[in-house]
Image (cartoon, rainbow, N blue to C red; front, side, top):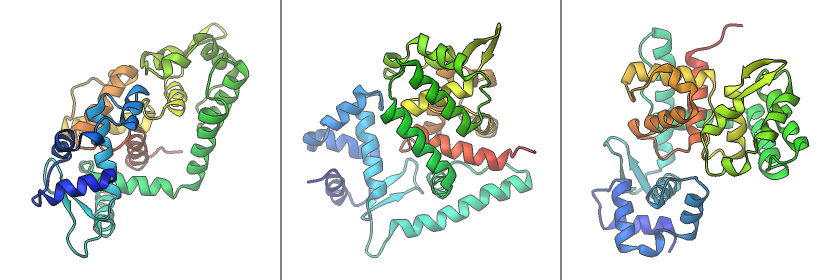
Length: 304
C-alpha cells in the first residue's frame, strides 16, 4: 500500500473529512509502518524538516495535492481532506480559483486597496507563472547543477569563485569584487554549518571587507546558501522584504520590526510565521520565496 493509499483509506472511514494534522495522528496510531520511515528520518537529519511530525505532515500535503481522488476543502479552516466525489477533478476546480485569485491581486493593486490574502490557490497560481518563465527556469537548473552536483562543497577556492561569479551574473547581485567575496566564503569554512543549518552563517558571509570598506551583501549571501540547501534557507531580496512588510501591516501576521528582516535568523522565523498564519505550511520555503518574489514584482514594480 502506498502512502496516498493510506490517506485514502483513512478518509474512506471518515467521509466528513479530516484535517492533515488529524490524518497524521491516525497514521501514527493505526499505520505505524508509514510513520518515521527512512525517508522521513533522512529529511529530518538533513534539516529539511524540524521533526518527524513535520516530515509526515509535509508528505500528507504533497500526496493529497497530487492525488486526483483527494479533495482539499479550503472553505474550512484548517482545510479538510476528503475523498473526491464522482467526476470531480481537483485540477479543474483549482484552475478556476487560480484565475480569480490572480486577478484579485492585480485589481487590488490598481485600486490601491489591500493585497489579496495569500491562499493556496493564489500561491499555486504564481508557481504556475514561474514555471512558464523559461529564462528563470534555466537559470535555476544551471545553478542547481553547479551548486549541488558539480561543486557542492566550498573547500576549493576555484569552486567558490565559479559559484560566486555565476550567481552574481545570473541575479545581478552587484558583487564588484567576486574574488574578495569568494575568498571570504572559502576562509569562513561553511560546509558543515550549511547542512545543520546555521542561520547565523548568512549574516557572517554577507559582511566582506573590500579595499578597506565593509560591504554587506546580505541578499547575495542568502542566495548563496539557498542554492546549496534550498529546503532550509529562504532567499531574501527587496521584493520579498516589501511583501512581508506589506502583509504585516495589512494582516499583522507576526510582530516584528522591519530591521528584523535583515537579521537572517529572524527572517527565517518571519517566513515560518507567514506560512503558519496563512496556512501555507504545505509549501516549501523555496515555493514561498517564489510567490513573494513574483507578487512583489507586481505589487512594487521598479521604475527604470
